[in-house]
Image (tube, rainbow, N blue to C red; front, side, top):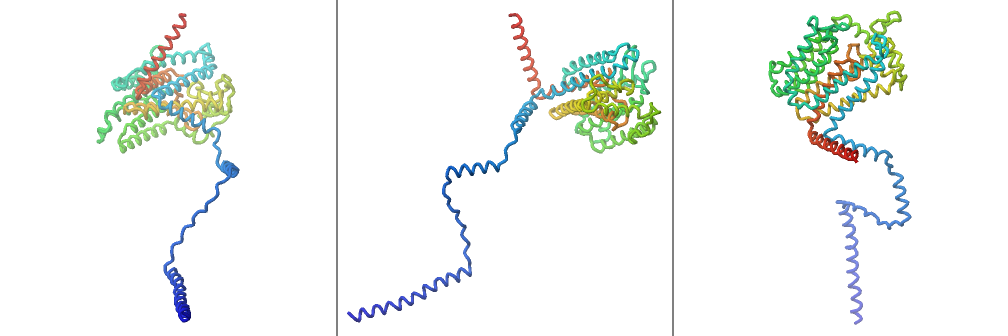
Length: 484
């Protein structure tokens, strides 16, 4: 028993000592393995945080609110305005009313300014009344609005049928200014027809005819103008006849408007690019020839380029007289003007104060605010015409509208540029505003054509019928109340 108990401990000791090196070697082996091939580091686990107390949450929310941007006060108002604009813009009669309201506003302003600008000239010119020019202009505007209403109900197909007849009649009327006893020259321009006591400027109506005719021809030839002859005939002869007859009457200003109308129609009508460039260069060369071949036109151009430096106090009838007094009129108006009817330049200082330079009288009497308001209304009209082109599916409508756009908006831009001294004086009236029977009647007739186009917009016919029903029912209710 004693030996046995003594041997057991001795036998266990080697086993224990042998295991110890094995256990010690295990970490060494693991360390060697770790050195040879390091293990990827384990991502640190996020520490769990204790749920925040109510006071901590409140403090955190306050700090976050302080860091975030506060919405500006007008954001809701802008969103409401944008939503309302989208709703109104999508209405099928919006284009119709934009054009109509713009034209009515310009015409009414024109009547007021014609009365103010022409009162002295009208009374001093032997008319015996300061209202003489105003009465005539009001009568012309009445005729123009009657034609506008009638033309607005003409269907688009009818305008296509009338295109060739209108162009032929316009060219014949323009050629009639050269007939002895029928044509009349005014201020160097042989551009009038006089029958008894009635005068007519046929070039104003030729503008409408050219736009409608080019719209019809280019729409029919769309995609077929692959050859020179097919592209040029009858487009170029028609443009040449219209422009040539006007230039022959020594009216380069109106001829420039006709050229701009033709180029706008050709551009929208997908006229071939190489032929378009050729025609544009030809018209530019023709314009340069007529400018440099006339001493009067060349002096007007030089006056603009030299800043009116040749004007002296002695030469009161020099080339810069009208332009200088137009600038004097604009400058003396200031921000709000000297007051309606209180212009000083209209007292025979500014030539054509009620006609070509009526914008200067607007600036003097109504100030910068008045001139900007006029420009804004013309911009509104331009927006309406662009809507007609963008929303119509008829190529004829798009081309014709482009031509009328170049006339009404382009001529307005030229007139304002002339008054501001940026362009030479070329004798173009401000549409709807300046005095002139042929101008106001032709312009309102052109607007009637545009309104007839606007009525063809998708959904416009249904909206017009619904509007008529509402008006009819309103009058019915009113009649019942009156009977009671």
